[in-house]
Structures are given as C-alpha cells and as structure tokens.
Image (cartoon, rainbow, N blue to C red; front, side, top):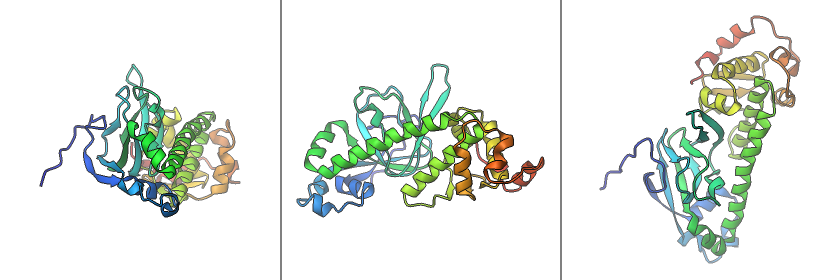
Length: 283
C-alpha cells in the first residue's frame, strides 16, 4: 500500500494537494442538488465521468494568490476562508465557504488566481479542471445548471461582504455576519440558530474590517442584549427577530443595542457575558 504524501503547508495548486480518491460527476451532482438524475441523465453519462476528490488538511492553502488558474473546487466537507494578501503583508479575509460552495470561480476567466483559499479544518473538495467544464456541461445539462447556481452563490458571497461593510457600527457588522452564517447553515441542512464557528476572531475581524479586540467587544454587546449566547466558538441565536431588527441599522452604537431587543443594558453587562465563556473565543 502506498503511503500518502503529506504536503507542506504552502501547498497551492491542483497537483500539490493530496489525492483523497476518485469520484464521478454523478457523486458531485448528488451533493449539489436534490434533482433526480435518472430523469435528466437517462444514459448515466455523469456516472462515467471521473472527477478528482482531494483532501486539504487544516491550514493548507488549496488556492494561492497569483498561482495559475487551472480548476474549480466544490467543497464536499469542511470550511475554507477566501482571502487576499496585500503587498505590506496584511491578510484581508473576503469570505468563508462551506459544503456545496465553489472555490476559484472568480478565476474562471483569468490566467491567475486573484484570491487565495485556505482550509480552516480538515476538508475535501471535488476538482474539475477548467478544460473539462465545457464537455461536462454539454454531456450533462444538470451539471451546467449546477455550475450556474454555484457561480450565483459565489457572487452572493461578494454581495454579503458589501452588505456587512455597509454598516458603520462594528456590532451591526457582526450581527449581519452572524445572520449570513445562519442562512448558510440552514441552506446546508443544519441548525440556523446553533452553530460552531470554524473561524477564529482574527479571521472574523479581518472580514469585518475591525480589530480583533473590537470583535470580542461586539460579541459581548450582542450577548448582553440577550440576542445571542456564546461559549468559546459555539454560538446560539437567542432572539432571531431582535438580531435581524438590529442588523437593519447601519449606525447604531453600542449604547443603542439594548433597544433592538427591547431591553435596557446595565453598566455591568460585561460581567454576565464573561461567565458565558465568551472570553474563551479562540483567536
């Protein structure tokens, strides 16, 4: 038996990420859609088309900024952060992607990747080379439809970032981020109210455009208003309607947050939150 080769943390391309096995286009389509393939693919063409299935260990880059663009990656398991690194070394997180979402779609019409993608946990992805996309789409119309939907979801991530950054108050930005995450969890068949954040506060802070200490204070404020409960990276949305109402404001300050849930915050609200385990939120 051949021993799998563990790649270095800087693994960046289609050929350096370890192969986890072989799959078919049919496997990918079953993950992406509830559509009955027997009706749309009567000749079972999808089951004869081989796609790559690759394992990406936590911390390893699947896509590197500036690397040749040669494939699309569909997340099967795990979570990725999508980011870019400026010339001064600052890492700007642009989005997070989970199961059923596509990576590297923004480079489909480019020679090189304009962003990078790194695994936040041990993950697996289906890999389809760019040169195969046209043939797969012609042979299996269901794949063409799913490719369009995947592209739409990728555009939605951009819209989500714009929506978050449109808010002035950091607490409002965090509220919008949590609601977006809640929607993504619901779309993947998981609880929209209780979830475990795979990303640390530094990554969240980078996406929100604030200091990571500000993220901690924003979590504290939302918890003190009884909108959420936080224990380490586990989040429970206690008042979904209240969180949505608060998120619709762009400029509400920390002092105004209690009004979103109809509660008046006292000066010692932080003490109650610290007992909930919020101070343990991992960086």
